[in-house]
Amino acid sequence: MQLALSTWQEVEDYLARARGIIVPIGSVEQHGPNGLIGTDHLCAEVVAKGVGDAIGAMVAPTLAYGMSQHHLGFAGSATLRPSTLMLVVRDVVESLATHGFERFFFINGHGGNVASVTAAFDELYASRSLGVATGKVKCRMTFWSAGKRGQVLADQLYPGVNGNHATASEVALAQYYQQGAIKHAQMTPKVAPTAPQFFEAADYRARFPDGRIGSDPSLSTPEHGKLLYDAAVADMVDAYQTFLAY
Ligand code: NI
Image 1 (cartoon, helix red, strand yellow):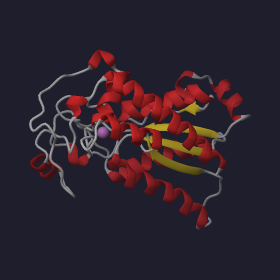
Image 2 (cartoon, rainbow, N blue to C red; image 1 turned 60 degrees about the vertical axis):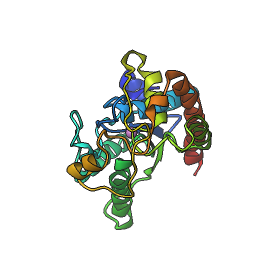
Image 3 (cartoon, rainbow, N blue to C red; image 1 turned 30 degrees about the vertical axis):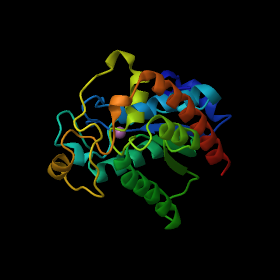
Image 4 (cartoon, rainbow, N blue to C red; image 1 turned 90 degrees about the vertical axis):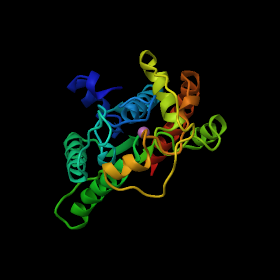
């Protein structure tokens, strides 16, 4: 079920039998020479919708923008400040909680979101611990790619070259989801450089000139994307059901 495609009466009916909701979250940022700007939110969205279809779970509209300050050296990238993202997450969760949603399962496509989103979760819990708020909201966030099936498959498909940004697996999954927007580009070098840390946008661009980190997404295909989709949906169904029972 998709919240955006439901009526308010259908949401009420859902809440009479369930309290969980899945929230896809990603980014709007460069993904190298053949990766789409929307890669992170497209990947989170297609997996979230797959989970919703598989088990009848409610899926919220995608939070497309994320914390991407380090990508602003590349055209088309846009960021929320960490403080803005925290407020967006808080307001969305608190809004939906007023109707009775209690379990918020964020399926994430972007590493840059982790610190801010988990800090927003801690703000919610802190308000209860300090006695200034009540409620039963519990939140969890996981990467669409973090499950065992998905990890094993990515290692099989792209041994040692899946990378850390503009990964071969996320480019493939986006190709599967948006087959009309598949891009082809020369990768030079074939496998992108890596570094243990980066800072602001200019620093990032200097270290990673075409935007990739450690990946070779010239290997990506929509057929791989379909395999990765099936693995990720199965992984996230398990993760969501585990969370509901936690
Ligand atoms: Ni990404």
